[in-house]
Amino acid sequence: MGAAMRRIHVGNALSAFGLGFTVPYLYVYVAQVRGLGSVTAGLVLAVFAVAALIVLPFAGRAIVRRGPLPVLLVALVTAALGALSLGLSASAGTVLLSAAALGAGQAVMQPALATMIVDCSTTETRSRAFAMQFFLQNLGLGVGGLIGGHLVDTTSPSSFTLLFAIEAAMFLVLVAVMATVRTPRAPRIEGAPGQAGGGSWKQLLGNRAMVQLCVLGFVLFFACYGQFESGLSAYGVEAAGISTSALGTALAANTLVIVIAQFAVLKFVERRKRSRVIASVGLIWAVAWAVAGYAGLGHGSQTMATAAFISTYALFGLGEAMLSPTLVPLVADLAPTGLAGQYNSAFALVKQLALAIGPAVGGPLGASLHAPYIVAFLLFSLGITVLAVRLGRQLTDVQNQPSLARSRVVTQGGAPADAVVSAEA
Image 1 (tube, helix red, strand yellow):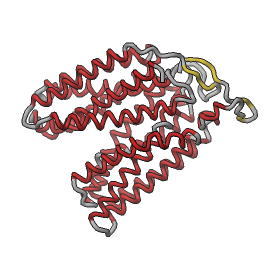
Image 2 (cartoon, rainbow, N blue to C red):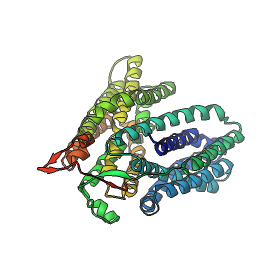
Image 3 (cartoon, rainbow, N blue to C red):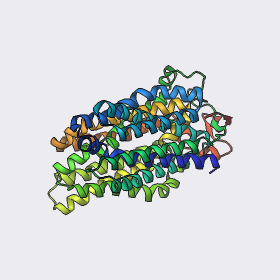
């Protein structure tokens, strides 16, 4: 890694640390500590999603026109102001406005940082760079949540004020770190679909491979991340009788598998077609949902049910470790020259939409209709496999398997396909 990439990874870790530092305790802070009730607390969590959905379409254009670094710095300052004001807010109005600022800032950080990684990597090194990003994000979330949990005291509003103040300070430290980053020009694959100029959403929607990837991404995030803390946890408690401590163990198992497996699976993933890797994730997650079905619908002991439920989260973690060096690098390789920021923002928008709809659908279903819930999401996982196979037909050989770019000649329909030109990513 060069100096620029090291700073970017520090930025990813610090931004994830800030997120893990406060978000797990937002509901308790608003509803109980500030005494604003469960309705206001629920609205705060909804505001996070709504703010992201509003700003992300504009963030892509801004990244293309101004570059990712200025957009990132504005997002960091906005998030810092939102975090600090949230820690000082005592009324529903100010809490909601502060949450909107924090949510908008955090949402824009993702595509901005992703675009900077694209700018500082090549087709051959991009998968490893995004694997490192995912590893550090999970590490930052885990460490932030652990430290934050030891600092807060529900009987003391000042402890939460300190928590949000530290988060704001982290974002400002990140401003100082990222302001020194100088991104180089990155090599690009010539002949990718949609390489013509122009940055409109119409052009993006005209890129069939990107549209299929967005549909696939929506199903991925809806069927996995959108269920972790809503439908799947509700199903575990109601159907499998999982205790809150076992639920925490399951979430910890998910993070542990990601941290351990991330670089172990990287070499396996780098040498295989991206579409087949994603298809394999769909199969792994289908097994995970089947195991979850045994936990809640089987007739084993409570110990077996708990072990199966924890295994479900572990299997999800394995799939996530395989996706991290695959999905976002593929978005970058599909983007026309200079439009990686817009494509990253579009994909982030799809992710936020899935994360907003997933809990709303999965929560009630997992809590009450146990068998239909398992069957539905097992089918969603198999659908991921089908969509991944179809996506593979839209990709060039090098887009689907970047390791082929190392070959001197890669033929696609009889024409060289490994031509690489130096341009903005």
